Image (cartoon, rainbow, N blue to C red; front, side, top):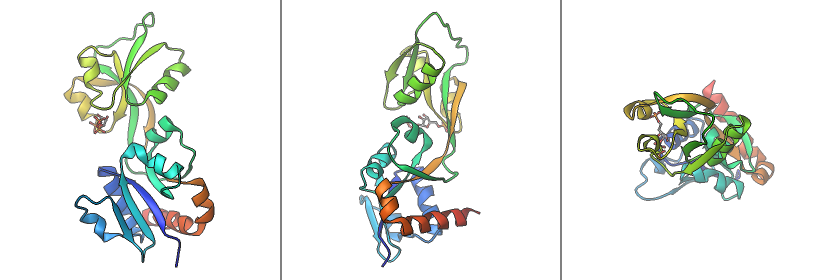
Amino acid sequence: MPDMLNIALPKGRLGELVYSLFDAAGFPCPSILNPGRRLIFENEEAGVRYFWVKPSDVTVYVERGAADIGVAGRDILLEYEPDVYELSDLGIGKCRMAVAAPADFRDDPRRTLRVATKFRHIAETYYASRGREIDIIHLNGSIEIAPIVGLSDVIVDIVETGSTLRENNLAVYETIFPISARLIANKSSHKFKNEAISRLVREIAGGRT
Ligand code: PRP
């Protein structure tokens, strides 16, 4: 019997895409398609147990070994810098981290820049590298509202299609880095369940070529 792999999937659209990739690679768990309110799904035969977790919590499960592997966006990995292995770039969930502002925004270097974001560490690192003094306004969502109502000058947030920005009269001011979904592994699981994890990585890569 192969090792059972515990897999943390990010709840939502990205997680569903990731599950179809795993399913196609030979790690199906059909009960996940009829979830009701359940959050854990197991297919003993395929050797997988999936959990749906909040996208920003995937790294917590994997770092502490409650999940052997998981899928997280590059944004989450750069924000929280978890102590995990990054095994591969799944090439899905593509978007970018950007600074956005009202179209007529001009940065005045004499003033502290007020930056609204969910990604405090990313924003601090980015502006520190440019020697720009900022004041972080930490929000948990709907960041686009901040510059409209005068809470901030700019936002640092994820841009995918750009429609949230457009519909709120904002525009990308600078791109910080591109994002895609990464397969990550717990360090000790990677050692002790190496065969099962390597097989999964191989099958997933095979399914995409
Ligand atoms: C993300 C991000 C933007 C939006 C970008 O929000 O924070 O608001 O998606 O996508 P777009 O460029 O395709 O419009 P999310 O849906 O995760 O919600 P929240 O940040 O408001 O919680």
